[in-house]
Amino acid sequence: MRARHLLVSVTLVVLLLGLSIVCRATVDYEIYSVAEGDTLASIATRFGVTADRICEMNGISPSEPLRPGRSLAIPITAKPEAAPANRLPSPIKATRKNGSIIGYLGSVTADQAAITTRAGAGDTLYKVKQDTQLLVVDEKGEYYGVLMVDSSTGWVPKRHLRVQPVELAATPAQATAVNDADPATTYMAGRPEVVQEAYRYWGTPYKLGGHLPYNVDCSLLVQTAYAACGLRLPRTAAEQYGVGMPVYSVAEALPGDRLYFAGRDGRISHTGLYIGNNQFIHASASKGYVGVDTLTGRWINMLVGIRRS
Image (cartoon, rainbow, N blue to C red; front, side, top):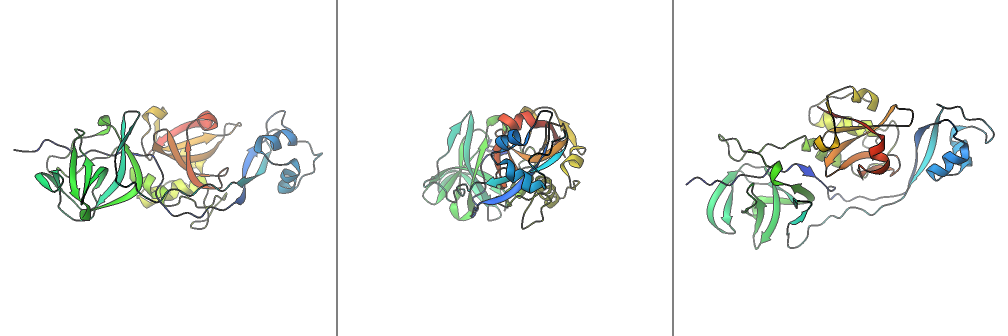
């Protein structure tokens, strides 16, 4: 009898890769376009710096009038943040949040590894290819439990699965049918491979006009992540905005879609990669390094477009 279980299609990367990061305070800057009514004092208050520091950074005097539209370099001091956790829970046990099942990224290390109905026994559901990615939701002895599309659990020997401290979320609606010719093949919505590439640079210091691997700015991060997956993009955020298919709302966004933000002058000034769960990864001037933020507050107010390639 043919098993009717299907492999789940994991689509949302919701937390950071478990990289060992040493965070240290850095001083950098972001570009601000002066608006009507702005003063040195009001700009300094908004960014949490002193007016003298802005003057020093831009070579101007405190008494110099500020013309609307003028660009100022605003010094940003990045506060050290705790390094991301680099461990798995023991034992692994899935959690649920907002209707999603949260587990951990597992990569198959052996070709034709068997997924069975029970830990150490039962019928074989599938034999999966090496490097197939599965959502690990349980653990029993020498076996990991992986989520199937019907929300049941299949079991894989631990020796055939490498589990990483990368949290993933899946919902039944995100599961897709497998290819009948190859039932181990799953189709993942969006471009999660681009997101995972961007995570390689977690903690890299931010610098406008950056140069990897030493530092990076927002558009270089996006360009580099896409290039590693065989997709070319222009260098600047404004140029990238003109490439790809428009996505008309955050609700329709998929992992790997590009987010574009504009300042008060309406010009595209920032970009990042959507990772799912209303979050995005970007090279952040305010953080001082590559990290994750949520699309709320000023970020959702500054968002002017989403592009898909």
